[in-house]
Image (cartoon, helix red, strand yellow):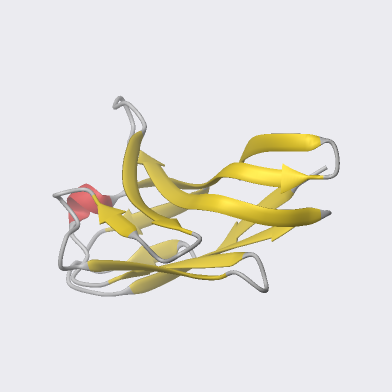
Length: 120
C-alpha cells in the first residue's frame, strides 16, 4: 500500500512564504506524475502544480511566478515552495501521485490534506 504524507502547512501573513512537502512511502518502483491540488471552502478542488518524473512542470495561472514545484525521484518526495502568498491561496492542499508503479500494478493516491491559511 502507498501512503502520502503532507507537511509544512500553517498560518502565514500575506506576502509571506511556506514550503509544503509530500513523502510517498510503500513499495514503489516509480511515480509518473506528482501533483498538488487545493480546495478552498465552497469551491471545487483545483490543480495547483504538477511535475513528471522527467521534471516537466505545469502551474495554474493563479500561481505562476509565485509557486515552484520540485521532486526527488530517489526519495519519492515532492515540495511546493509558495512565495508571495495571498489570502486567496488559503485552502486545504492535497498531494497526489498518478501512475504509481507498485508490485501489483499501477495506482493513483491522495494525501490527507494540509491546511494553508494566508491572513493578516
